[in-house]
Image 1 (tube, rainbow, N blue to C red):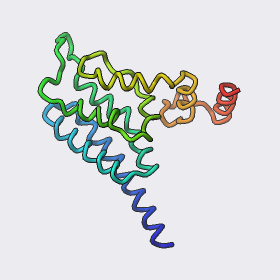
Image 2 (image 1 turned 180 degrees about the vertical axis):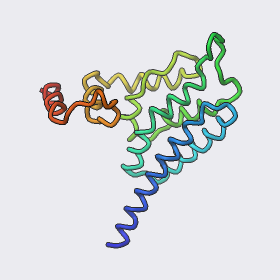
Image 3 (image 1 turned 180 degrees about the horizontal axis):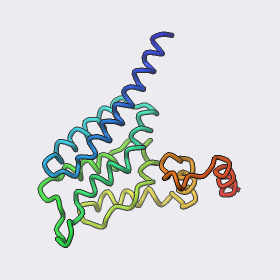
Length: 174
């Protein structure tokens, strides 16, 4: 019994640390001088999570997915009036994006469906095509239901009270 509790506490600690590291390192992906190192560290964390999967690990990664993807995509968005891509020498961010989407575990599909569409740059073609294919089965109704089920993603001024959520979910399902 004591060993089981220790293992559960250890997993909670690992998942918290994983979430913390993904968030912390993800914030520095946009720094050109740190891009390769950040992508390498995140990729390593993803590989470890893949090798030791759990429902909680998937949830932690799923919660960080939109942030990590948007930070990685932002590396390739043209800066200001300059129409050239901002990252030219590194493909690590694209490799990370592929690992987060195309190469992700099948249990991540629901989180991947919720990602916003990828920009129409040639460098994202394969990822965008994959994302569009899996989103074909993702209706606006399901998207709204998932949105309502996760109130911690909603800004405080838009939070619905719990009873209003139940009415909204019931009216959408009914």
